[in-house]
Length: 180
Image (cartoon, rainbow, N blue to C red; front, side, top):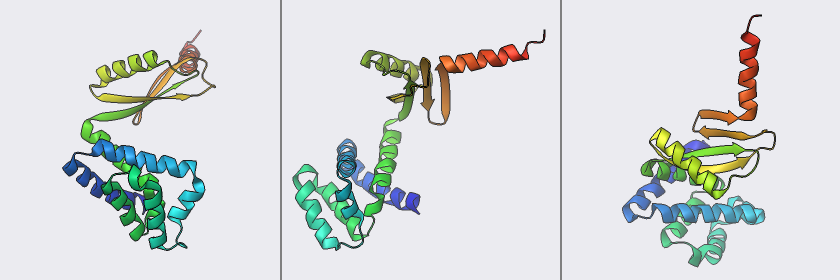
């Protein structure tokens, strides 16, 4: 149900975004709304709550987000409230982001490292991945202190294991196959 609801609303918003040439703006605004809800969980609970009247929620949304969001995004939030779909705002944002990235030919990738990558290292890796895949890669860096070193890259459902731990596992497996 959540997937169906979020997909329907994100598709509708995406169509408007394409018509108005505001895909980046709407994505930034949705991210801003979701980030605000994460910073203020009580506010998010209010947005989702079926116990509070829709008109009251709309008034609060207008007061808080009014001049910080485009008219289209304010109206979109009010439609979500009218249809009692406030609970799905994060999923709608994820689906919308996927549509924008697909439209722009962007693929998200995650580089998992033991220590944070510098901006130069991140840009270099992103460029290499773009060249290898032929796609525009948007790279984020996650830290996993269990890695000994190297990098583990996830692009969609593919994993490129360049970590020291991964290499040691491969070596161990190769050595175990050697018959003495």
